[in-house]
Length: 129
Image (cartoon, rainbow, N blue to C red; front, side):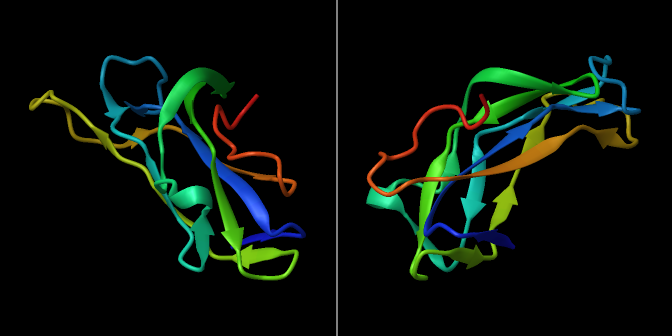
């Protein structure tokens, strides 16, 4: 659930690759694929923009894991001067290694929401600064 005292929010994400045994940079990993689908069923995107946030240059570090950030997508609610709606993110990872060992693969993801003042643009560019 995303709650704000603004009708428009810029939503984005950041994600690391997934590593076996919780060892960042280890030999066995799953890599990020495509973008991150952001779905807010009761809000619309501004100017008909797709609801898939694409990975863009720029990273942040969390506990030794490198997170790759997405661009931001501006969503607008139909609520008067507020945004109080459920939003869902879908991340995808994969590998081309058919002999990757089984086990637990882990990493980090972040969901980022920032307030967009009316008339300030379409919210493109990296979500984290």
